[in-house]
Length: 353
Image 1 (cartoon, rainbow, N blue to C red):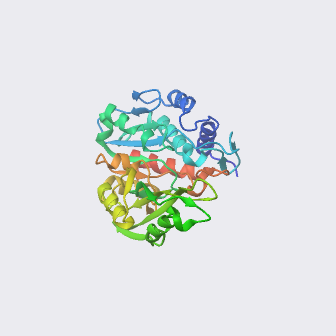
Image 2: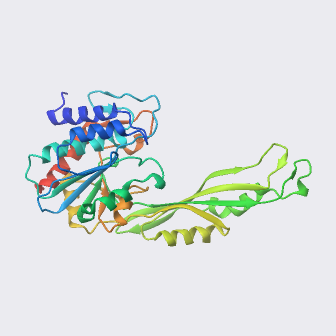
Image 3: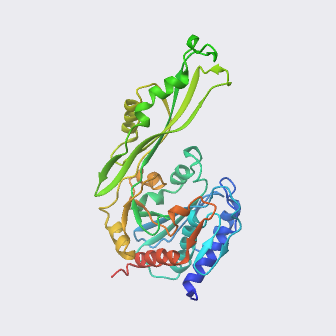
């Protein structure tokens, strides 16, 4: 079945973005493409992040998307068939960027109910130390006026509210080294680690309901390192713990909970807060109706947390398929591109119903 002109346009835009390599810290070519493609007034550009916004004195809706991808897995460049765009970043999240760019072209000529802002930023696939958003917030006070922020992360066209907090902790168990032929002369740090973390390893997921949405808290041991040789009883074992916590907890409360569960001295190495569930926002409800979207909790951490920390209502909504994110066979369905675009178009024009 032939594609409609809108579907063709969105698919070709997505493929063009996929075919621009932009692994984390190498987003320069994609930044240049964005600045050449978006015709709305530019309010900020530091050579990496760029912000656009119309200025008609109306409530601001900000669309946000990251320009980087994970490293290629033999899936670059991309390709397109009758139903999908395939290739690195297709679902996470160049499909979302394509929707943003095409909406900007439409908004330049349309009569909108909102001012439209667009934020493109790099290095999302890296850790908090590489997050450029705090600097953008400091330079662009306009962002803090947004009535709603939509992060176009892959959500399978569901409206995903809030997000889990993400805490990493380092715990070290100290024993005493010895020859492996005479282990009774030492204290095996691996045994201490297994005993010390037994409660964590056996811990069941904890469901937390927020505004009718169920977030699942989980504490996991994600890395373990110890031992120096096959014939030495190890004197030290290092473990990394990851705690995904519900929006009902503050970062300080999450840290206290991990210390309580572990019962051992530990170092908090990262603690990114959860985001509140903006279910009471009239703008969120209008967006939900515009696409007939199912509402779900965000069982992960995303940059909605950065916006929520500033008191803004932020949601995740994108055409990408979550189960294809970061996979070798990454792809996005063209029909999903159209659905996201048309829903946001109706929402921005206040033409719902």
